[in-house]
Each structure stands twice: as structure tokens, then as C-alpha cells.
Image (cartoon, rainbow, N blue to C red):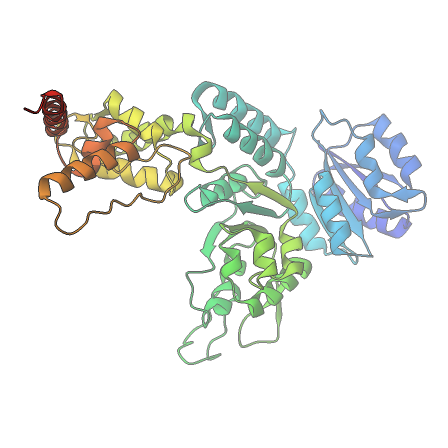
Amino acid sequence: MPHVLIVDDEPNTRAALAEIVGAEGFTTAVAGDLREARIQIVRQSPDVVLTDLKLPDGSGMDLFKELDPSIPVEVILITGHASVESAVDALRLGAADYLIKPINMQRLKAILDRIPRAGDLKAEIGSLRGELRRFGRFGRMLGGSPAMQDLYDQIGKVAPTEATVLLIGESGTGKELAAQTLHDLSLRRKRPFLAVNCGAISPNLIESEMFGHERGSFTGAERQHKGYFERSHGGTLFLDEITEMPIELQVKLLRVLETGLFMRVGTNQETECDVRIIAATNRNPQEAVAEGKLREDLYHRLNVFPIHLPPLRERSKDVELLAQSFLDLLNETHKSAKAFSPAMLADMASHAWPGNVRELKNYVHRAFIMTDGGLIDTVAAPIQLAPAGKAESEPIVTIPVGTSLAEADRRLIFATLQHCGGVKKHAAEVLGISLKTLYNRLEDYAADNAREADMQDVPVS
């Protein structure tokens, strides 16, 4: 049976917690201070530590140093002196949760229900790391580049905890997929995962969508409505584009995060919720704070464990892996067997993909549709490719009025060749002509230059 160590300097609290924990199927040991707790840890390594933050001889957070890091132990901090700073410190050290006295016993039972038996959750994460080495996959995520392996390490560490996570990354980098992976690897995975784009809901409806409303609370409210917080009780709520949430609603969100209580629109009755928050933004959150788009106190509450998602240009080795995965799904759906040509793979690898994984996925889908045969090539699915890391601004060709069409064509072709780094296939695609036509034009220009040079060498009589 899993073993729980209860550390509190109040005898009545220790006894009450031991009774509740025992009834949930755990063996228990108790301690009144850090010295006794250290003795109990030596006697039997606990699976869970329930400890008061303030103890007669130190802080409950000191016990993190006494635990063997190779053995999975869930630490739950309890305090009667709550502060955002202490909660953030506890969760960053690895605490599974943070409870405020008087302890809500229903919430404590919900936490104990999520405690993994025999370290099965962390063992699963370890097996996913092995899967990554073999196939470049980590749960729902795909990629074997160094940048993605760093990302997987961060997700693997924070997923089993209750820490709030802030995902920061450009549009199309897969923030919702990362949030879903965090949920799948957490103790809440059997409970709901809901995603809401804070910028896609009308400002007039977002409070009702978040917290729900009572029947008759406003015009059109013909029945009671449960909001995202209520529907994701026990699970995870993903708040995408958090900086787009109205500033007045951010105040209410902060209160829910701190107290676990909210009120439906049209009532003064508080409702309790047990929800883990994962937020995301494609903006620099500190700049959003400076611009007044994000409350500073909410930012600090969400920024317990920030994770940066790398753009696709920083993980170019993953482009072929991702593109092939998208193509495999399309082949499976349409009962086909299309494949990329080597040239197509090389072109995709050289593109900067400013729209990241979303842009790549859309391009593969378009290329699949445009290809009639079995081999997908850039001739069938042209795309304006720019070398990775190069500026996205397009060069301008100025042609004076009176210039002949032949001369205008020549200038445009040479400018496009220069823009494409001399790669003739890319230049032909951008110009909308065949590669053979481009070669013919270049041969004509070379012949013209040769004739002009010969004429200059002829002596004038």
C-alpha cells in the first residue's frame, strides 16, 4: 500500500489527516517537526508527504532535500499563511499541490485519488523517452531535434505536478498539442481536457462561457449554463491566447486561481472547482504586461512553470518527419500511396516556414490535392520557398516606362534568380514557368551577350 507521511505541529490536525488518509487506502506515519519527519523518512520512504509550511524548527519545504530524487514522492504543502510567493516557490520545487488551512477535505481526497501507485506515471514518462529515441515521438508530439528533446524534458518534469504552466511560442508551434500532452501525462488524464481561445469569444459572452450563467440572468439566458471551469472540474483547462482576455475578466480569473471558487453570472453563490490551468500566448508576456494587455499579478500567477515552444525554423531536422506524418494520415484517409520526391523534401527543408507546423501541415495537404500521380513534386505543387533564416521581405524590381517587354522579362528573371539564391528550380516556380523554359531563356540571354561582345570586338572602319 502507498505510504503517507503527515508533518504538522498541531496534534489534532495530524490525527484528523491520518484518519482521512488511512480511510483512502494509505498507510500513515506522523511527525510534529522536521527532526521527527527526517526520522520517519529514514524508517520508511513515503510515497506522499503532507507537510505544514511553517514548523517549529524550519520550513516544510526543507523536506525536499531529505527525499531521494530517484524515488517518486508527491509533496503536498499545507499552510495557514498563504501567499502567492510561497505557492509559487513550493510548486517550482516540485510540490504536487498547495492547500490552505482550514483544509478542504473534499479537495484533499481528490488529490489523494490522483496519487499514482508505485510510480506508474513517472515510469510511463520514462518509457515515452525511450519511444522518442526510437521513433521521434513523445506522446502526441512529434520531433527528435535537440530543441524538441529539451521541450520533452520540461513537459516530463512538470506534467505529473499541479503547477500552472505558461506556454509561450509563435502561432502554429503546437501549443494546444503541448497542453494536451501535459494533461495526458498528468494525474488528471482521466478527467476532462477543455481548450478555449480567449480571443475567439465575444467580450460580452466570455464571462458566461468561462463561469457559466443562471437561467434568466440576461436576455436570451433561457436555461442554466455550465462554463468551462465547471465542465473541466477535476481536469485541465487550456486558456489559449490569454493576453486577449478582457482585463476586467482577468481579475476574476486571478481570484479563481487563488481560491478555487467562482460564481456563475446571475448568482452570488460560490461554486468550488478543482482545475489545473495551462495558459498560452504567442506574444511576449512581459511586453503584454507593459502594454496593459495582461495584468502583472495574473502573469506571475500563471508563470509558475514557463515553457517556450521552438519555431519550426529552429528544428529543421523535424520537417521531413512532420511532413511524412501528415502525408501518412492523408494516404490512410484517402486509401492512396503518394510519396514525396527527393527534390520536394529538400525544398521543404530549406523553407523558413514562418507559419510553423500549421503552415507545413496545410502545404502538405495542398500538395497532396494538387498531385495526380503517386510522386509529389514541387512542379505539381509550387510554393514560394525562402531559405531558412533569411529575411521575409521581397526585393523590388523597378522598370522604367518605355522598357521593352523582353528587357522587362530579362530583369525580372535575373532578380528572381538572385532572390532564390541561384536555385533555378525555385526561380521557375516563383515565376510560374517550367524549368525548361527558364533554361531556354537563360541560354538566349547568354547568346545575346555573346553577340554583343563579338560586335564590340569588330574594328570600326
